[in-house]
Length: 426
Ligand code: DSN
Image (cartoon, rainbow, N blue to C red; front, side):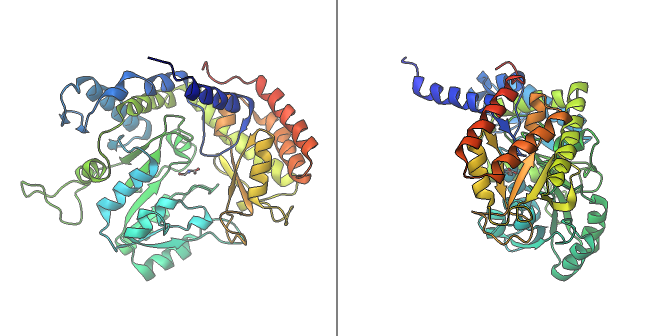
């Protein structure tokens, strides 16, 4: 067969972009060679609808083993009693949970998208906002942090069936214990979406939601540094409170309902090659090397946030507890949008994403903010001493945003810097 040179040329270009640039998108990372190998393996050839030991296809004996290994390792990593590793993405994991605990039209609460929440926590353009009735809780303008008293007030007012903790652009830790008190007060299920800080939570660097939240979802590709995908967990399984029975007339456990919501509820055949890569990532996340890595992610973020503050930027909530920070450009550069900065930094081989900031005066297409994270550059090996120079380069570009010569100069500096930090052995 003729080789597809056209496609592989594009992949080589992307590898070159990833290798020579500074990757500061908070939700991205670089997987290990072994994660990549598992993802590119023959397991992609296998259909395996169902779950280990209960499949709708023959020949599943090996993928049963690899899926079970992924489940067992995830349980060990997060101290979970039950795990489903099949969700193709975090949004699909969330969709399966909502389908399990809500009926169409039911009310739930999540962090407002414009305040750092996620599309699948109730955006009107996502199934969570189309099928159900979301109310967004917000952060305080003065502190940039969630006000749990106001969350409680809202819960008492709207009586949600579900409350979601977690965010895509929130740099502070969550008080899951307090949220469980609120949920219990109104009879709601509490779910945490830890897609962003999962790696920090797994290794004890942030509050653990599993003892407090009924259900926890995550992605596996952000701080966890695995393949692109999702997962659902429970610290402890429990009989469903909605009276749903098994065919034998027993009360169904929530685990069984969640399994059915993932497959056949929202997905068909699982991606067994990706599930195998999840197993590799969980193995890696349990190692001492990963512990050093994730500690460094957190240290780098704290130092970088301080460097932005020192340069006169407004960092929302004045810092970070995790791997990311949200910068409101309006204090230092009131006339410059997040979109302009994102586009200009790309020309300097620095990748960030524009982001709404709480109480933003601009639209989501323009934005007044930037979201910046350290998981990917920490995988490359960058340490605290590199954070100041990175902020310096970003500030140089923004301060003189139309100066093409300056952009070229910064790009050269970035490329020179990254030559010293090879990616894994790709
Ligand atoms: N798109 C992801 C992020 O960048 O945070 C969330 O799904």
